[in-house]
Structure formats: C-alpha cells, structure tokens
Length: 440
Image (cartoon, rainbow, N blue to C red; front, top):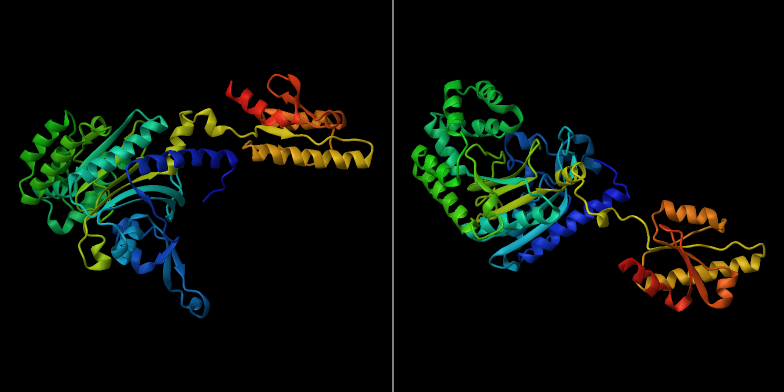
C-alpha cells in the first residue's frame, strides 16, 4: 500500500483515461461497488490459494473481543459484480456490459508490479454464452494496450474444459484436478521442474505430470495447436471446449485481437470460478501478466440461484504502469507538471501599493482560470528573481508580472521561462497570448 506523488497520480490518470475511453467505445457502462463485502460473499470463490490472501476485518463494537470476522476487503471486482447482478437483475439490461476501475486488496508478498493494494480495470459482459462476447472483450483490451503503446504482447487463451480433458488424458483422477490446476498456474514462475515437484507434493504421480506437460508443448499456429488438442482430448466436454476456442479464434480474425491471440494449452488461471475460455496478456520480459480473465457462467448463480452466463477481463493497472515507466512509454503530456502561467506578486516598500498589487494579482489569476488556463499564484511578495526561479522549478510555461507600472498602463509583462523572452501584453489579451504561444 503506497503513497502516490503528483507525477504518479498523473501517470495513473493517463492510463485510466485511456482504459475508460476505450471501454465506453465498446458500449460498456461504469459501475462501482463498496471496498468491503460480507466475508461469505468472498470466501470459497477464489480457490485454495486465493482464500489465504483475503484481508479479513474483525467484528467491531461489542463483538470485537470475539476475534471473529464478518467483513473483508474486496479481493477482486468480479465477485462483487456477480453479487450486484444477483441483487439488481430486474434493473439491469438483458445484456449488461460494465466496466469498473477500483482498488482491490490482497494479503500478498509485495514484488515487482505486485502490491497489497492495487487497481484493477475490469470489463465484463453478462447474459450471453456467444463466443462474440470473448471476442469483444479481447478486442477492447487489445485496443487499450495498443493505444498505450504496447506492441510486443500476446493474448494467451485456453479453456477450462480443454484443461480438464488433458488432465484426464494424462491419467490424473478428477478428484485431483483442482490440485493439478493450482500447480499448473505457477508454471511461469517455477518452470516445468517446479510444476513436477508441486505435483509430487500434492501426491500426484510424476509420470502423470510429465505426460501432461508434454501435451502442453507449444509451437506452430493456432490451427496446428487446435489440431493437436482435437487429437489429445477425448471427452465430450473437452471436445466442445476445443471447438469453442476454434470459434473464438475464427471470429476474432477481423478485429484488433485476432493477430494477438495464441492458443496455449498450459494456461490455467487459478481462480476456481472460471468455467470456459480463459485469457491472459503476456508481455516479453515480464514475470506474470498484465491482466487476464475468462468465462464464469456459474458464479452469479451462487448468489441468485439462477444460472446467468458471464465473461470478463481484468487489466492490472499497477503492472501496466511499472512496464510503461521502465520502457519510457509515457508521453510528455502525461508528465506535464507545471501550470500554464505563474502569476507573481509584486513587492513594494509602500504597504498600500503592495496590498493593491496582491489584489490585482489575485484578480488576474482569477480571470486566467476562468479562461481555462492552469494558473498558480505565488503566495508571498518575494523578489522577482526568486519568483522566476520558483516558476522555472515548477515547469511553468510563463510567469506573469503585474507591478505598479503594469497596473497603471493596464498591461501584464509575460516572461517565457524556457527562453527568458519578455513582452508587455494588454491585460485583456493575456489569456489569448498564452494559448497562442502554447499552440505553436
């Protein structure tokens, strides 16, 4: 959990604005949910590993000494969405498309791009089982990353039923599939040998692990991978999963997501609520992903008793910011810190004239702000040299001087900090002159 200084906030807002604009172009609507949820809402939704990372909140007041918990900090944005849909289904459209950009909390060990409090940028579509849903989500996420300047990413895709089919074909009993998926989900962190050891620790035969990992051998086109999966998966649900992946790949071809999608049989994603296609953004030289998601057709039914199909994708804001900073991807506009103009306060030996100069400086600052400019007013009657030095340190474009002579002539002296050039401008023309200079 961190403090964000002004430059951090500006960069975060730059990325959030790109995400919001893109999601709204796809017809998604904004939603916000509380930071706290009932503990029962969150537990049992994230699998063995996830449940350990929930920040639980002790009962308060007269129940405080019990040591029991009744609330928890939001772990993700998907489970709260499922609760909202279950509670407000009658007020929502048949096909509810929402985006949500809010912080979540996990009791995790901090690492590069991994924090205990972090923002997720979620986009979800509720109410349809059509593969067009997955395609649109992938296209929206791809558009976000392209606009931010990412070019070297891959959208890895798999299917939970295909994974189960591969586990079955490798000889792993259905009762151990959950344990196997937890181990497989760590592949990018611990490697093939680490996954084999993880299998052994979970009492799954090493031979089964080797057969399964052999089936994950990547390479070739999506068509070639789909052909291998059709040959390897023999159960009906697994075969349906392969054809679902094939439909998504085919439908995505005319969209921005088409070239980025790669079928990857090793992709697991550990959250237990996924039921269908699963996706993840992989970037070169990054341990972990920039985001991921998948279909979760059974989650809303846990709250409403009604099975409502759903699919979503979540971008990790913190990971994106880390990579963009390391690669110097932010445009100058995202880092623009200084005001358009710093209005100085003129110092005079005569107290009355100093007071009048302050009033005139305040009036000028007010007028320039009304004209839409970013204006900072120097708060003290220091020597002009100090005020100019401060304006330069603040990266202001101009310093405006309004002393006794300027006031008498109805003018303002504008000093361009980058060049040191000065000019006298009629008071009424100051805002237009600043805007004109900024546009050149």
